[in-house]
Image (cartoon, rainbow, N blue to C red; front, top):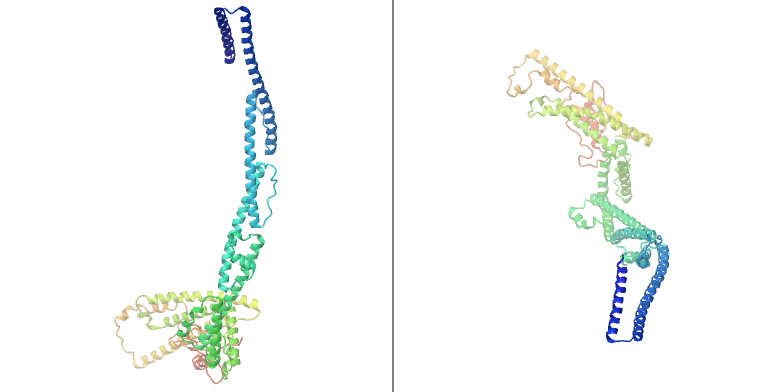
Length: 563
């Protein structure tokens, strides 16, 4: 039994006791029956009115609950529709009071969700508007009157996040480009002269519109400034090169050069102006010292002739080299020729360096060959003989490799340019073959000289007798068997004697081996005139060494032809 039913029965019992108690009081008092009846009717009336009032109140509560349920259900359906969620359904049977409570709680929850979504939508729209104004992009299309769904809010958040990332990326690019633009303007001493340049340099960074068009315009402005800067640097570097050349030609002292050292770096407008002033000053000085300048250029010409392995005919082809009328036109001819030679050397630099390497290797090889033929080489200490022999063998293996490599490169060059690559007026490989043949003939000549010397010594000993020789202490260091020493020094090629004549490398002449010619870049160049009546180092050696080439009545000629 429910407690409410128990309380109802207890209420009936209490009422019964109260009525009994009233009757007892009435009897004690002596209230007549008709008055007792009246009093009982009053008690009944009071009790009935109280119960009726309580029932009416409870009925009113019931009606209010039913009405609240109806209102909540209607509002809840509307909220579910706006929030794009499933309608609320009560699970199982429940009382009116519990249903009203559940519906009211659900409505409050839906209202809260609606409010939060509307607030978030408003915040996202404000952020979208701010970002779109900075990035110059259209606003995000969404209905601000309706309640957005969770999916719509998620997409909107992702869009705003993308805009933030875009803003950060463009801002970083803008700041970087702005910094470079300011540096370029400072380098060029350029003052912003357009409204866009002033907005970039002078205005607040946060106020700058980070549109794609503005970023593209920024990049274009930076490219223009960098191009101007590069052109300015190229002009300044050209002026510095011109200054250095004029310094060298005019033989300007170091003290005077150091006085303008501050303008020998940088490319600002004031530096460029100072460089131009220095060039103008040196040009004027050059005109005043024409002869000195032309002679300096001729020294430089000889250097480039040597580096480019020009033949004597090619050198003599530049007739102004012989002129002694030192005028401005003559200077211009020399300037044009030096520029042409510089370009020619740069175009063929790799080939010339390869030829130079072969030349140096060949000279070193000949030096070791000369040492190998020296009879005093057996008296050395510290193992030098073994080291020299190893180096000589290494060079003998290296030379064919260099020759093959140069041959392949020269053939490729000749195919590309459709002409022969000439060195000292002669094809390189023909010259190499000629050098090896000259070396073989020189060894043969040295061998014949030794045989003739031995023959004469034998005849002398047979005629007068040989003088006894007392071995010295040092003689004990020589191997017991002379054949072994001879074998050690004849493993590769026969040795040349110290006073043999060897044709100079790319010199086009033959000269005595003790007087070796330095490479073109290894000594201070001499501006030797190539005019008739004046002898150059090449022609002098050619005339002096022809006598040393006579072998069995034959003379080895230069064999050089012009390019």
